[in-house]
Image (cartoon, rainbow, N blue to C red; front, side, top):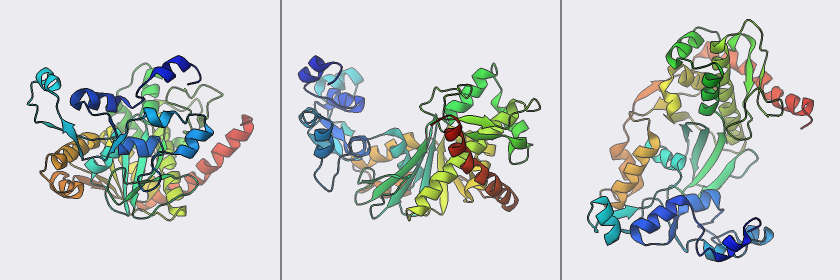
Length: 354
């Protein structure tokens, strides 16, 4: 509206790309409750769209441009149009079932649906989710979002923006590294990576550690350190970041008893063990760690009528895999290092004039 007012004024619909695909498939102008509740502050139990925020931003016209129909994950949007069916080689009777944001649908694929469970979805970023039966609002906790994944339940969230992307940065920076060899060498180190601490507070996924204005830093780097030291320090720093989110959850009254993990980081046994040791919680990895795909399959089966609820679909389709228990000696060592990690960010912020 500010930079291209003519485009904003002429737009009949402003929506997520997912909603555009749904429109082309079914002819239905609708949006996902998951996206709307998570990103657009839609309140399924109150006034709906956040009119107060829109008014404060001078965007009151946006409500009329958003899709009018809000569809919860697992509900049927409609069936394929004849044109879409012909293009896809399917029958027009095929149902299109609503989905949502990848990581949130990953909660379903991990089988995290009840209070006390925690879902950690990993990729370029780390996102941690919990399920509550009552709203939770506190500093350091995103949400609580009502009904965006499971009807009648809330979701709380916390996250780190640069996790898998930082590992990719390290590989590029060092001219290409073999991750298997890197994991093997890093696993031989003691907790603390021989004095390195990584503080992962990035503004986006492209800010390198070498940028002095970034909010991330490696502290304690010496000439004796090699790439596997930095690699271990990175994943330890991400483990500490996850621990900080867990602490914020606990302070808000939400305490999980285990973490179920999906995504790319599960391919590193070392990383999963460090998550268990830094959090002091068991880590569970389901048989299929591709959580968003599994969650999408559960939603599709529910929408197709195979299961009466998402919970029933989880019970039938999400299979347990391996478990990793925290180690007492490493837990104690990480508890000491974690205190230095917590002190690092405010110290860097003061030093950089933030």
